[in-house]
Amino acid sequence: MLRFHCFFLFLCFCVGLQLVCSRHDPYVMRISCGARHDVHTAPTKTLWYKDFAYTGGIPFNGTSPSFIAPKLTTLRYFPLSEGPENCYNIKRVPHGHYSVRIFFGMVVEPSFDNEPLFDVSVEGTLVYTLPSGWSNHDDEQVFVETLIFLDDGTASLCFHSTGHGDPAILAIEILQVDDRAYYFGPDFGKGTIIRTVKRLSCGAQESMFDVDYSGDHWGGDRFWSSIKTFGQNSDRRISTKNSTKSTSKAPNFYPGSIYQTALLSTDNEPELTYTVDVDPNKKYSVWLHFAEIDPSVTSAGQRVMDISINGDTVFPDVDIVKMAGGVNSALVLNTTVPISGRTLTITLQPKNGTHAIISAIEIFEVIITESKTLLDEVRGLQSLKNALGLPLRLGWNGDPCVPQQHPWSGADCQFDKTSNKWVIDGIAGFLTKFYHFPKVSGLDNQGLRGFLPNEISRLRHLQSINLSGNSIHGAIPPALGTVTSLETLDLSYNFFNGSIPESLGQLTSLRTLNLNGNSLSGRIPAALGGRLLHRAKFNFTDNAGLCGIPGLPTCGTHLTVGAKIGIGLGACVFVLLIATCITCWWKRRQNILRVQRIAARDAPYAKSRTQFNRDVQMARSYSHEHTRTAAENGPPLLT
Image (cartoon, rainbow, N blue to C red):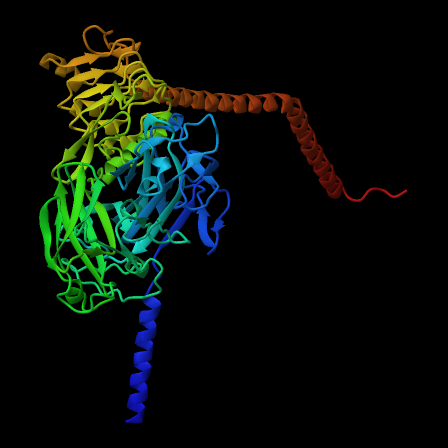
């Protein structure tokens, strides 16, 4: 039994250890824009990373326009010469729910426009337009804060020029929060962004902001300071029990300090009224924070209020003590309302008791996220950008099609209902007016160099391409013939060479084809030539090597580049074969002649040797005959 208990305790320990190890700290990224080294800000030594390799732009000395911005001394600004769209692209961001804050700064240079006005987008959705006079405020105008779900591993924060100075960014914060933080109803989720419009710490005479800049800014309601306040210097601490119309959980965003003060109406003004300027025809999520810290109220029923927004009662019979579960306990009420006008008015009217009370107010704009461009087509445009070496002034940063107010120069977009994504249907050329300055929105006559990559075939929804009047060289990619939706192709007055790909004949929707003013050669594909009989407008002039249709030289002896290469290779092989045969014959002939010369040179020597051999044989024969004669005649007489 003891052994079983020991094993059980060990198992529980292992499981607990695994759960602890599997938990990850929330993701935090703080960037000091323009900094060359990491920075720590006083008094908590909060770490701000340098922004090397995140974006383009120019680092410069800067200053924060308000005390609620981090005390950093550098910023990064983006001149229009580097393009109308510039982005911070932060990678390896874990999937989750994030608070994204972008602080604006001022360039320390008299020649600069000290208050630039520009647009800000997060993940392709326009979230903020800086208003005139933003640098003179100590409120939400000096920074933009959004709550957004990031689920693709990156965070894209872009700044769009509108012709009023160069965007200047002081700092960026990306803080992971609870997935249910500021849950406001069925529309909450990955399809929405909420942006902070106003925060008020009711009863506070001055704005408050966390010393390490990791919390929320709470603007004081000093504009209503004539009304009685409670708990301004109180040390009282309260619980943060939430009781909301739509149950909310936001522990990272509800600092207990906001419940230590409250605004209380007076006998002369029993109602409390707040009016906030907003943009018309949008939805706003309103969060009301309460805590019964008035010592004169000790039980439920002693204070009951009706709360209305723009005249409509949204929270009737609000009893803080009853709904929060006691005095000195937090109560949070939330509702989302559409606003057609330019003001949002919150009215608290007492029903039981003589006064209304409130601790804090938060107002957020509910923004529907933009659908992004199809990823494969974005990659196709990026390949085209790299191959053509697009100049910085054209931009091409962020998403090509969103925000819709700031598409890429030269990229025409169309929404595809099938994929619920934006697609590229044209690479066009024309000049338009955008805001208060001219913006080049075409790629024709831009002095582009480089070549046309095969990856252009990723843009499968293209209907028109106009790259005329540039210095693009190389061959026309055969992959272009797979873009079957193409109707207009204008590559005139460039330096394209080689032959026209046969695959262009597969473009049955092609109605306009301008290839004039290049260095193309060879026979025009028969399928393109036949299309001329169906009211198609093709222009092949000023290409010295093209042939095959009326108005151009006949092809007869005019061969395509492939045919010329084939003939050349065949001729080379034939010449090589002839040379090999001649070489073999010549070497054989030389061998024969060499043998003949050797034979002619050695003939006298051979003849004399033959005569010598014959003389030796005759001498031997004569000696033999004389020897036999002596034997026959007997021994000679001895002297």
